[in-house]
Length: 460
Image 1 (cartoon, rainbow, N blue to C red):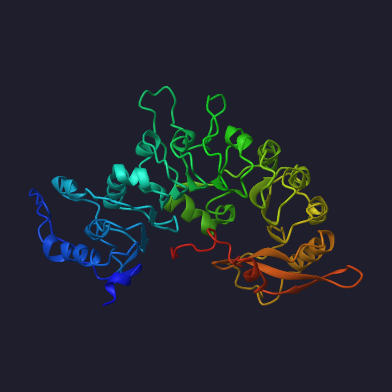
Image 2: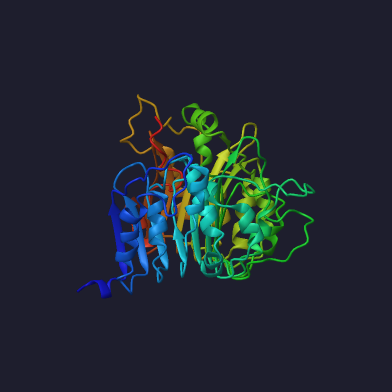
């Protein structure tokens, strides 16, 4: 008998949707005992089962009843949801009382999203109920969900003492203070309830009617709540955010970026989707604003850095600041955009400024070249490497430290956005040579695709 030995289970099923009468409440819902109670019973026969991945075979999403059945397994520690959840937007009011989710030992809720799709009222309600469970709050260590599903009022009011990873992606939402003494409840109020946090990813698109929001607003009395923080990802950071001036020495990965990528707001073909379909805009930081953040950052042990900015003429100062603030960098991703009326820092300036980084191994860039071909042009031979990309890779490889192994320059082609990667070698005299190699990033655990910028939904 294999059941006593099962530790990991992948459920790929065609879960049935139960029917509910509009004005009638069933406890449990009608049909639940026939369909989902046996699922719980069978899972409970596996005493070592701690890790379950749930995936629906069809496109209409995993019903909330299936999640309800799974989380009742007493020893379940890790729940992974693959695909979409329940797409029903309306449930009978009384039926919501069935959303109790009797959690026992759940440590991981992993429901990854590309951030572009909408979420239903049912899944929002499901996570609201699930995260308000006392056992969930007490034991949860990893929470990865769409931002629209995050109950900010609960996260700001309740303690999550064991939470180590919080990852939200999607549309930025705000919580209005009930006293209205301040317009938004800042994220520092949420983080204060998560003292063991090691990874924080706020990959949030900016609605047109919202400005940038500081995690820790200026003048707010607080202490840094996450002394063990190792990874930080924030989209559209506020240049006066006190949070960045207090980052701990434990920080190893810092990403201050646009999401979605700013280049998806530059061409009419993409911008129309961003603004008209999603209602998002891209308040990208200027190089001066990014410089203000980095100069105040005390986390000198960062080894992976990602920054997006529009060069207002201070790009050279920003590049020269990076080795001073982050001398131990091993991987650097830079997305630099041109600003009308300003002269951007040259590739030579960039290379010379970053030359003091003696541990740098990977440099990936988007430099917004003026002569870059239009990604949707029909008369461009994309089989030929654009000369400006190879020249930039040559200049960078020749000027950067001998530690550099990979230089990647972003190229946009139709719906694809990928780094053209060059492997850097040196001869006996130390002269750098580059050779195009699209597999070289794999050795560093990286992808040539510009993730969270490339994988757009098929909206066209």
